[in-house]
Image (cartoon, rainbow over all chains, first blue to last red; front, side, top):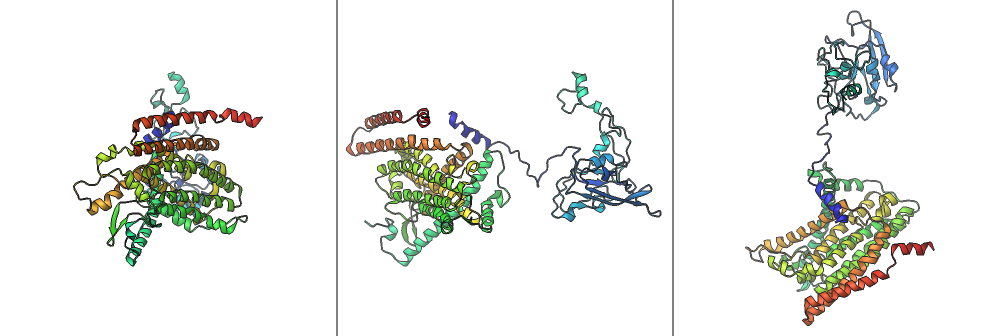
Length: 214
Length: 402
């Protein structure tokens, strides 16, 4: 049966479950820190976090961010402070979702959602303006017609912020030193790294902790 | 003896209503074949997907059943290009030469029993010509012209290579194909497709299906027929004609739009008609047990049951074709030729001799078992001698290097 055993293989496959995710109908769960489309966050009182410092534009390796700052109007300030982001544009034809802008931002104004399912069909749609990037009054990202949101994609927009220490120390334990967000309040820190289940099977275990358990 | 038709439809001469029946049969057969191809391509893609743990077409219509139609409409509206170096009239003609034999082949296949339409008794097949079996051979032979001329008239390398392969392959396997059919014809004692079906007659009850043992008398020819028919219709694992990895697309590389679609259609239409011919020659066609509690003249028994048996057998063979497509890798070209010339043709010839001996034994009243044993022994011995005389692969190489 050697030469004909291929027939058995193909026949057996017919009853097996499919691995395909039927994408537009269903989506797979994404990693918590996936880099997707950006949002511009606001404080709990509705003030914008962006101060128009242009650090994000400066650090961007793809040069896709364009920022112009302006002085806050005294009678109706947009952000708490001297200046605010007057123009804020991200060109998604160029953005490589490296998250360097998020790291550079001194006020946690720009973070990334987990949405990557957006298929614009012209250049004007590809360049997101400040109106489109800024979270709406309930703290959720504004949804463009060409974006496919299925919920949960902007829940942990600042997950990266919540687990990384400002100094980047690996042994950092979650400690709140960030500002609150419109719609969410001050978010709780993620579980610290040493609280992880100390089992050898855990692939997420940090390597120096693995040495300790061995 | 009438030369053109054995169908009882023409017993009382021609009239307008007889003509009408013929036109109806032609149109219905045409429509059935086209719809069958659409459904076959869809089913094949679904089954292949199942066998590869995929989902397959599922967007157009329920379960993607309209996918082929959508593809056809798309191809119909695409631009048609003709290469500068092409032989334009032949290039235009070739797709039709490819699809026409596929249609004509289907004409002689009985898909049901004897029925009455508009008060005329007739067979459920477009034409029952006295030389139906020869017609099958002729049409399957002619279909190589479409492929050959398509490749040649493209004025391009890969199509030419593909069409040369096609003609070599078809000529090689046509011999085994014809001999396999011959083994059936010797027993059926007729060339008419209708007669073959009803002489081989699996019978109308379950008892005769087993007592007749027709399948035992033809299973070697059946195996040879299936392999040769696969090669005839360029079905995997014999699809070297359009080996994508080597020849871009083979003979149809330069074709676009609806002309390409016609080649595609012809290819799958040929798979269906070849399966139908296999059902007709080896599996008893539309014959099979009828519903016992109804009279044989009841419309359910005269119309529905034969069509049901025919479809059931046809679907089984078509599933086999999909299964083969999913399971077997494409053959190497020299292996293809070796299989055709060193195995199939010899075995087919010897099987024809065995069948003929058995038929003579039956007519003369000899001991059938003894005759079978003796002739089989002679056949195996003869093949042994032939095999010993064949150049082996190593020797052949040495000869060429010298």
